[in-house]
Image (cartoon, rainbow, N blue to C red):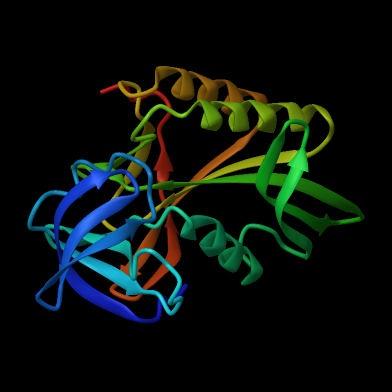
Length: 234
């Protein structure tokens, strides 16, 4: 996924979860933050960031905050991009052979899943619902999700378990929005119930997968599989 109109900046403050104060080309700007998570370990005063300039003259803010440098590691924090990146990756022939259908935002029960796929396997057509979660929280090469309590996330995982009972396949895909991570774990301290729900889902047959990303100053691309450890409570 390519971002046009990118510029470099310096982060100063985040007055609320939707806005950030950033210096761009020597001028302080109020920018839209495309991630409502906490991102406290990333958004520290003085860090280098990447912003995207909007072409829409009617917007209240001219720029969107897209990525943050954590030392030398570039982390994409755009919470709207993981679904598009995973869709792009699947359409290139990954995950499903003989893909026949791939749709965004398909309703099942009380939920609307990020993706719905149909693919042919031998003489039958398999149907699958997929939920995508972007991950930006990392410590010493270990990613963790979520970075804030997510009752919505628990509900989506529970719905994935229910769809198995109706003959669908269920997939939960974590897109780790950086390189340099070797595994992902539930963030037990932040939301224990989410980790417990993941464990039940895995036992029921939901496919829980994780992939890292190649992140540049104007792009993000889903890349290599990463180990998922649902037992690590460290």
